[in-house]
Image (cartoon, rainbow, N blue to C red; front, side, top):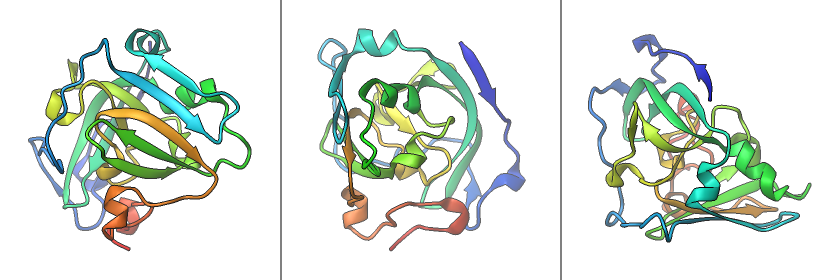
Length: 193
């Protein structure tokens, strides 16, 4: 298992953020219950090959641990959290996006979606995570798998991921349709459109 990352310091807070100790639960709608034997991760759209992974196939992929900070659009941040999962770029390599693929829509159990530029998804610190600080994710925080995109506001780190749709043009996901920024860089305070 590979390990990388950095610890947390209060001076790493983006503008308008405050450090919290707990981990607030921020969810629109209920918490889906996903039995592992029924969980699937589908990769489709502008790809050379569509892929669907079972839990066992997903867990057979190379694992990574990393330490990173997370920043919620509502103003809270956590620094130095440890995540374990599979690098998004390793999952993406399985389906080989077409050259015209520019963005990805994360589809989640429960109906939530969020868009991410493909170049953001392919960064080495972006994970499809199943563990946080040494424990399996709790259902309210995204069990069995959530995205962790530490360089963007945390609404882009979608919970309960079930599919990644590769798109030739970026289009808004759930919160983006309601006025959230299309990208969501916390250092630029890209909170709202």
